[in-house]
Length: 245
Image (cartoon, rainbow, N blue to C red; front, side, top):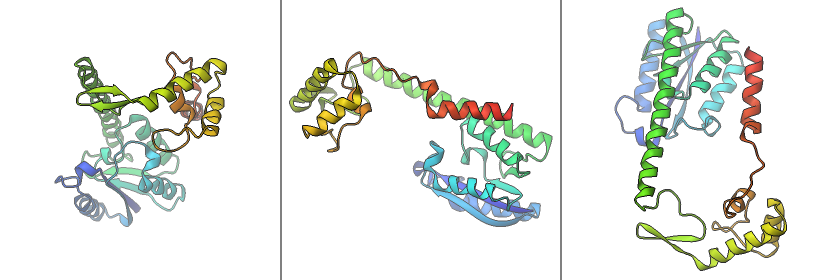
């Protein structure tokens, strides 16, 4: 069987024993030797988190290699190296199954060619999703607590500058906010506001022209007509559900 390995380590994990790229590579090579797989390549994402899939160049190359139909198995050190997002994992497993490609992990006994191995895969996908949501929940609660104590968390909003643990108004940016809200009263179209700001050479904090999203954040009580469920991701998820049902 021809196999491809995939290894990944985030920036904060690079020096941690057990998840280093070198260790993952060695463990995958050993596993393939034991199973009798012909390991033809190991694709890596170095110093990259497992967040947005399209921001991982190695992961995108892996998808291309899967579509080329030249391999029989994907081998990982552990499932979380691929992702902790359950939808990503389940979709990828179906993607592999459609091409008769097996998914194996060195740790965790995942082998989707076997019923028990597939069950291990499904359970780990579920547990990884639970951990991801727990981290998100704890982070949100911690941020809310800091805000309740008057601390500034995250990026400083436009119109203000950091002053110790608090904020103070930035006169020039406050004037831009005033102009934006005046324009909004005349026309609720964000593209029109952005165009007028560009004509007046009024730039965002990064020195570039304002985007619609940046302008929207400057308007208190803005009525957003965009429905998240109708976004690109929502449409793709619906097509995926229709295709696999």
